Length: 220
Image 1 (cartoon, rainbow, N blue to C red):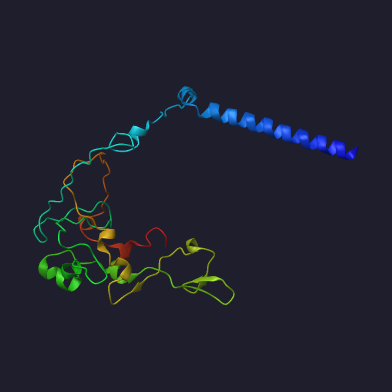
Image 2 (image 1 turned 30 degrees about the vertical axis):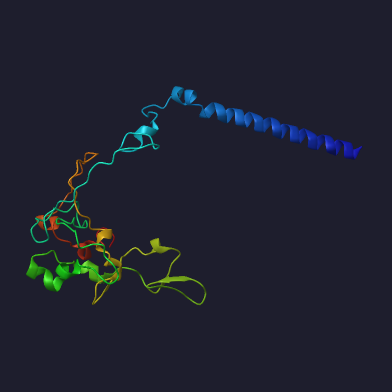
């Protein structure tokens, strides 16, 4: 008798699961149907077609035209500097970099003109002091397995509020790959208009870095 009740109960649960699963699938089909999505009240939002997801305004499948891009900037030393995009932004490369890249472990031609000891003589922008600085905290595990940063036990990196840094005698290796931040300019028509306007405190910030002086601004 008990076995019969147990079997009947299992059968009832299984049947309910099948029924629920069937209803779940049917509900999802209804919700995901294109017709129903278009009828939903999306307020100010609109349904975006796949051809509007990218700049080329065509489907992801099939051939498409790639806009022509020209890097026809003047040679090094012959190009005027660009105003920085914002305070302490990485300067844009105003000149052609043809023949100067790629940067490799054994060759970085940017350093030939932009190292501080030669930049002034050739009229180039000197590599700033921040590139000869190590901003990474001294991190290690103590004998109890705690994370210790700059001599302080922390739960995570956000526990460190004030940026500490060490001056280096050589270029910080993390800054060696110049083109990871500094980019050349191409002669193309912008696909999206840019209305951003930087707020410089003075004219010097338009061309020079003062990162080390303001790195803790608003924190201390």
